[in-house]
Amino acid sequence: MKKIVATPFDRNRIPPKQSLFLMPLFWLYMMITLVGSKLKIHKVRMKGLKPPFLVLGTHHSLMDFMVSQAVFFPHRINYVSELEGFEMYGEWLYRKMGCLGTRKFITDFALIRNIQQVIKRKGILVQYPEARYANVGTSSELSPAVGKLAKLLDVPLVILNMRGNYLQSPIWNLAKRKDVYLEATVTQVFTQEELRKASVHEVNKKIAQFMQYDEYKWQWDSRMAITYPKRAEGLEKPLYQCPVCGTSFAMKGQDADLFCTACGASWHKDEYSRLERTDSTTTPYRDTSVDFAHIPNWYEWERAQVMHEIDSGSYFLDIKVHIESLPNAVNFIDCGTGRLCHKEDGCYLTFKDYGHETEETLFFASDTMYSIHTEYDYRNKGQCITLSTLDNTYFIFPLEDGFNATKIQFAVEYLYKKKTALKRHSSSKKIMEGKNDCNNNTKH
Image (cartoon, rainbow, N blue to C red):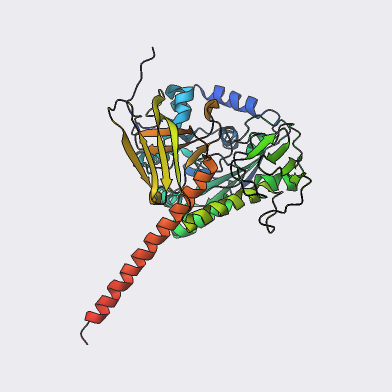
């Protein structure tokens, strides 16, 4: 029987450079992986730029790492990577590839120190701040701390915006679409001097601007046909709610078609990824102002439904789940069954952790989670979300109906915005009350 290792990952270990001896093998693997992708690289304001500098890349699929390596070839680079990759491929190899281990959607000061070490030794640090593959090929929420990190490092800031990576292998159906080609635009968004003059707000605004993307719009504008015959299978995971009858979790994808098992509404996903309605019913969409043929519009309509649930006080999730923890780069630990409760103030995860005699409840406050990591079929185990502490990541799989990773993500992101906005309002109110008190007590 394999020994279970519960020792937490060493977050403070200084990351090595990419192995000089293994780099030829890494480059060879990169070139083999990119064969047939017809990768085009566009460089903007990059002439003469030398390390150290920070790179923020859009996050679509595993191909991102290959494209990033190709863009900065022949430089050695360091990546920020989640511990799943360390566990899957081995910590030794991942460190030799120059990866810095961390957990998603937490504040990790050890990671910041390690990033600073990479920059101090005149390296290139590549980070994917969305921290999650794109669900429907559009940009995700970014942490407001990204701009602060850029200012702290005080080196040129580069944005790598990639196109085609998602379309080639979307997270909801990872089968590779061989007729998708790839493009990447790498831009020096701030020189060191420009970064020093800009405020954190200005830096964040520009990062968001240069990291915007819509893979389906790009496909349509490029007239790039995707002939993969099962191109709609799995699409029901991000598009979980029927826009005709409003039923959640009744959508089903089969071959190139998507349909609702509750009302019979159906759509055909054509070779340009447009969803054309094919059912013979005359029932209109619940919101006739939305163009549901464009997949991201359907996705954002679902987000609006979740926001409405929260504002009306009807959003609530309490479900039986299976939990696996990943404390390190060695092994997952089965923690058995538990309950996940998600409501306005945050997530409550109740279970018996490995080595514990009794159940305990971990609480993750809404105002500390700007987003959440989601998976649609994690290692063939189905949908899941993850919740992390500094020394552990909990992979949470549903054991009952009513769970959808995307819906939980929408709720987490909206609750974060509501809670932080409320905090700012309360803080401003206290400041104003303090000023009024001072004015009232001032003697003239």
